[in-house]
Image (tube, rainbow, N blue to C red; front, side):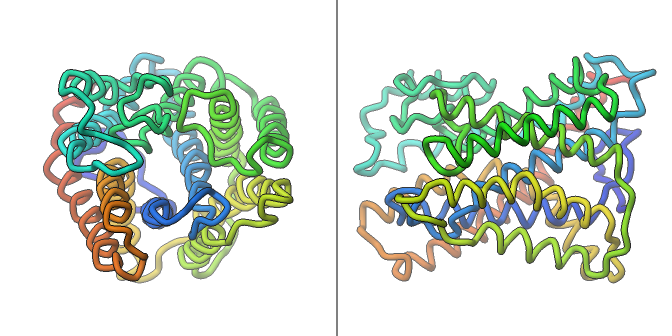
Length: 374
């Protein structure tokens, strides 16, 4: 366990510091995965090929943390208070991500999307929609690539995160552990079936309001969030030495595996995705929750990675759009654009820390004092 943030609620429980650190590792993996979108023609040939699976890891972590933090509070906490707490925790970074995306929008022009053709009025509407988590339909979003949130693509997972929190508050928390296990098993079977026999051979879905994205994104949430909650209920630590480094290696390795089976055997990659999402990620969370930091360096690494993980996830993608446009406009190889890629990663980490320190924490303190019982 670790000390909590200065912006945390007054009754926040100590964190699982290793899980915080692993969340940061997964966030960095997502940034690198998105970088290589600039060089991929499809999911089949993208490097760090399975980086999209980090979202399933995030959902499991979220369910585990929510269960640990709130399952024993419902005798004195209302649904409204819980949802307000989650809104205070998550929404400030949603807003800043949308604003950064809007400010940078007209710098991201390339042959794939013509930003110069978008009127300022449409950009303002899109900014409000992104900031208030109102998803855009594929034919109406301003970038033209079908994203729910065209100013900051990864916000789609927050859309599902909010749905998970509402379902938890209204329904899932009331389930017995046995009933919850049945839900997790059924959703896991559904997710595995979609992954193996679905049209894509993967679960890189959820970011658009199309049929397969709605179904696949819902299945990802309906397995992973309740699975994390179930883990929090049945968790019993086991003795694991080097749990953080084992978990880090596992997350990076699983995300970096090349596409399996190619276009001829999509089901093979689907099996791999299902194995990671349904079996291996819950195991990694169990290991991470069991471990403890035993030295100052690892403790500081976990603390830093945990602190920046959510801000990093929410601020990096507008710069990915810019990087993508630069690569396409200049027809660059990865080697030629490596300095820019390194600057993007370092700059995103720095911006995430600045947003945390000077925006997210102060805003959450302000909102907590005014919206929540002290």
